[in-house]
Amino acid sequence: MFIFYQLIFLFLNQILHAATLINESTLDSSRFPQIPPSWQERHDIFDAERDLKALFKKSHVSGILPITNNTNASVSIRVSGKTEAFGEIEEVDITLNPSEITTATFYSYENVQVNTTSLGFINLTFTDHFELSIENSPALLFPRVLGNFSFIPPKKSNTEAMSSAIQQYFGATDFLRDFILRFEEIRPADFFAQRERLYAKYCLQELLKFPFPVDPRIPFNIFNIWLTDEETPRELDPFSLEIIKHNSRIHPRSEGWNYYLLVQNPDLLLGTKAALEETDIQIISYIELIGSLELIAEFNSAIAQKNFGRASDILRTEALKRGGFYLDNDLQVFHSLKPYCYLYDGIFGIQPMDEYLGNAFMACSPDHPIVSTLINLIKRNYELLRNPDTFKSLSLNQQDRVKRYYANTSNDQKANTVHITGPSALTVAFYKAAEIGGKINIALPPEAIFPGKTSVRPTNEIPIPGDPLSINSLCVHYWTKTWL
Image (tube, rainbow, N blue to C red):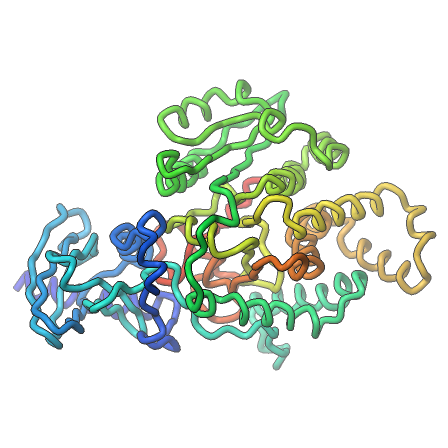
């Protein structure tokens, strides 16, 4: 009787998981491509076993898992996982004849291995439920082809029936159109068309048509930042420490990664230093690594005001001049970033609650035009705040736009930072520089970089640690708002 109830529980758990996980029902399994021959040779880049484990873990694959043998030979596989929440990892061997379909049932899955590699390769897909198959050729487990996504914002419907998330979304997009884009003299139609154009040109399914690049475009650098009041320094919180240690384990020094935690003075953070001693993370003064800052006056002003969020925005932009990835301390990565280093010059993600590009995750090749443009925008924005006489040099029409633009943010310190140095400034910089110099730049849909709890657009429901994530998500940002 206990086994019967356990099976019922697993079945219901699977149904609940399929209902709560990001809906990918629009995706067809055939859209997950095989690895092209030139990509298969890069064993230093693609690790199928590691990616499969990450897919199982982040997506909480559980319950009944259909398994199909799509090869022409009998295949033996070993499935490992837990049969109960706090149980030990168990293994079961399964043999499938050609075209045979069977199932496995675990509370949670750890890994699946083909006992004779030459006889087949694992593929994991999700439509309305998870399915595993054994293929004749290696499937690309990650990165994955994303579902359909329109870069053109949805139109307003019945305003009275809007949820708070919808109201927030249209408030943000209206501000983007009516103030920011007008001030920057950007046509909204061109703004959104550019994102769609770049995605159509540089999405994964297009890049798969070409040989895998020999050399990386983005260096193997990862930057985290922690800034604090030097008179009363505050250590990096335990949650953030666990996140960055997790990210570091996926990107070890042994594989060529440089992982930095940039601070003002490591000696002020003895607890943080001790917590990172046994890791590959280098806690280092930003001055020692970067040297003098181009935005030193703006940075010092933000520090003096104890606006560490704005100071962090500035420092992350300066760090990216070297090339690499900037990650917020509450952004958890599940797969190696190495493939992205070779495929792109610039990688950014659209936030799930608005149309801004989030600056919690940014990746650029060295001396990237987007970074240079962002630095110039920050300089200009600070000048407009510091020197009202700057308005006099503008036409009356543009002068009015500038006044309206800043009048809507000057009394809100959080919004002010968003627009002066943060996502708003990055969003404009991307538009102005994404097509300069023949770079391969992309703005990815929220599912890839900033997933919400659902694929419904828009959403302000953000995953919390332990929530299942889309099988297509590289990472998740928890928005703990440590700076605020």
